[in-house]
Image (cartoon, rainbow, N blue to C red):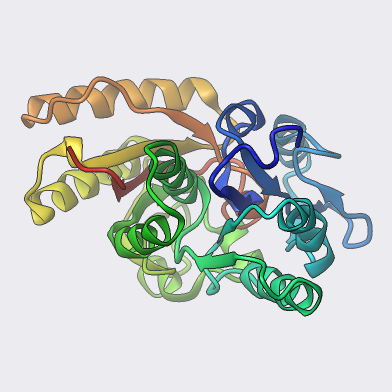
Length: 305
């Protein structure tokens, strides 16, 4: 926090953004972590008290234990907000969709308490309506807006404008974690209880929707690529207008091979794209997906050339 006061405004996100700590440090973004527990009693801060790789290994090694996550508290947010407020630095705080977590409300409660002592503090809390790696690239778009010299209010307005363009197209290893995590919802109506069925899921505007089913991993991941292509055709705009990333869980090698396949398919369909960054999905989301989530996040860029 040695650079407090040297920026026009500071960007904060909850841990759902799933950006690597090294990258958030480089981009001058502060992350307020979620908590995770394997026994319903002892909760550890993600990326602070438990590493993501260790978390996944515990899931893989204990397939019958379903971990839980807990949102940051208002005090957690106050601890992060206060130094910037005291330095007179405006804050933009980006939170996971309110449909999945109360993190946004914790941040709003922290803001209300801070304003009692610092009525002139500038704190904007954004319900991103998205999560995980999509939230991550949305946060990076906020960074790009800040670093381009765009003002505080204009940046907030642009972030509000682009969030509705966000989509996640993903699949999981099986249905069990969705059931235990309470996220089965509409997906259950499509997949039912058929043994071996894997869902393909779309997240948009804060909620998940069924987008198909499959039995093989190759089939479901291929359908995720199809959904990405379909979305690009629907928006009828060049791929350079969008920020795209891929999220994965335990298996990096599978994700890297899938990324190569996706790049090949996109290029075959006329989309000039150099690379797709890979980000590991964090504990706050993987408690619902299990150790093998895989898919894409896409959102319109904040700055269009």
